Length: 326
Image 1 (cartoon, rainbow, N blue to C red):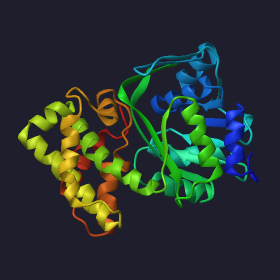
Image 2: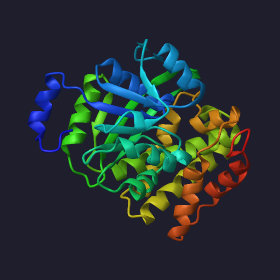
Image 3: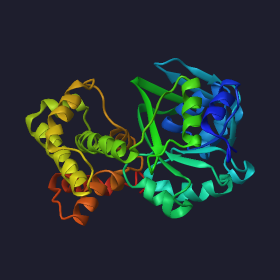
């Protein structure tokens, strides 16, 4: 661990190929992609995973098929029991938001005094949920922009150009552990950025994510079809305006004037693009609905902000939120 070292010396260690000990909890589309890139660059990465994906990784390693270049790891360190690993430098939480509390419990044997736990999940509440379980000193916020999934057990498929990671300490400090991890990411050719206002970054993504996921999942259609239909476009914009209003009520400095640039962003997406929640609805997987549209409604109610469109999206999808077996 790096308890008493200063950042310039830590950077020097990285330049001398010092290895970080990293655990990725959840080796799906997000965790599998970033974990594989870190492992391929020489970092000491262990994945925590269960089920068929775990068995395939244990037997055959991990393969990432990516527009940024494939990564093939013939062998990987993977376990379904974090107690086998011991304390590490960084933990990446890459499970669905509904599994946050369970992931926090999995983290406990991985913690030393200075271990950083970075959540790469969707939503704006996971950091608080983790700090409630693990303490404020361990938790960092994280935002990812990537479209990737488990194509088959042991295989991650990344499509599109985006594969960006933004993270930061909750108090805005440029801590030693954050700067060392940033260097590790850059050594792995990951488009990574250290933010001094990660809370704002989380809400910026949330404002885009909720309308996009909600409307593509609700209609079972791509964003191109949603934005070209006048009625659906009106719902898309209205849902975004509601999230911006909720953000403002929670003292997040995002102006209502930004709706124009947000709609331009939707218009600039590839017309065939869908979303993770669209994929989950189509494939009978559990939905992150409670942490997206549901969270907009819940956080709006806390500050007396009306969110009728997000409430409609939530009500229309909530019977599907448990997946095919829910």
